[in-house]
Image 1 (cartoon, helix red, strand yellow):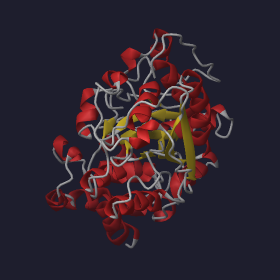
Image 2 (spheres, helix red, strand yellow):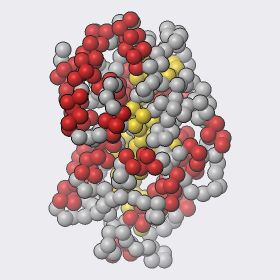
Image 3 (cartoon, helix red, strand yellow):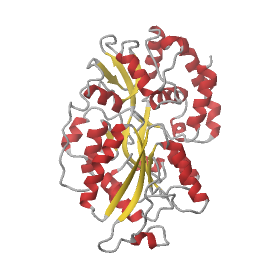
Image 4 (cartoon, one colour):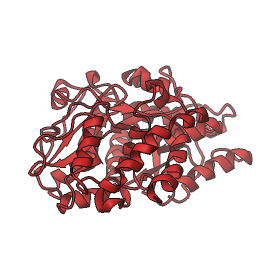
Length: 406
């Protein structure tokens, strides 16, 4: 997967055709819908570039405004934007979206560093106007003063997004799509999967080496499992708290992770990346893993996983969350960007996102057509979003020293 992975308006809506009913394979206790690359052209001949305000003026008649959109992820993310870009530009021929794709794992941090360096040097946007990434870079960019806040006055379809989700990021990012981590299990071996976190921990001990999770620094499903354990007995508000003082409460969670270490796959072997644990499940080497729901659904649809693989959410739910779109505060193309973001948050575009990504819409389900709402029937609870900022990195560091090294 990928957490990965971010954040839409014509009534002329055509439902995508799903290869399989989206959630017929989910035995889910629930997933909450409440939220749950190289240099671009940089050419700037539009009237918006002439504005010193940063917001930019509308392009003169006959002119085209072009902005650079950098995004990262797997091939399915690129396929998604390759579909949405021409849809948008057909409706808005005056706007050109110059997309720059960064393959997953190859350039998220250097891209962010380039945006930050350009700001610090007083060189504007660094030719990166719109950026897609995870909550980690939302938090980092907010702290560094990189992102521009968004509002419903500029992006009307922002009203379709959960107010709680926007509050979580203080309106510095737009959640345009979402996914969650669930238990994926082999139904030929597990007839009654755990439904709570305590039941899962008991199951792991009772079934040695039949559970696996990946190194949390290499993939979101493993990170979600580790964070869910670390915050298991902490107050709910702490999953939205990035204050370092919370680290003092982690001892019990890390003791639990160390305790189950000898009972996981290989008596303490942690595969790399989200796909690593999926491969173990597919090959029958383990019976239960934490996995991104969208990755499992996609691989089931493509026949890469057997249809005996099912999914189940637990209580309290594993953390998942949106993939976000962030507007560079130094961009002079905000008017054009806002038009694009408004489109992305429309039911029309969101339906394409659900089809292509096998995940959840970024907007609240009630804003989607009834046919699509029906596809999510019965999967409305349990999924939680975490926003702990840089503490996620600290958890990974401590996991390496306290758990992986034991």
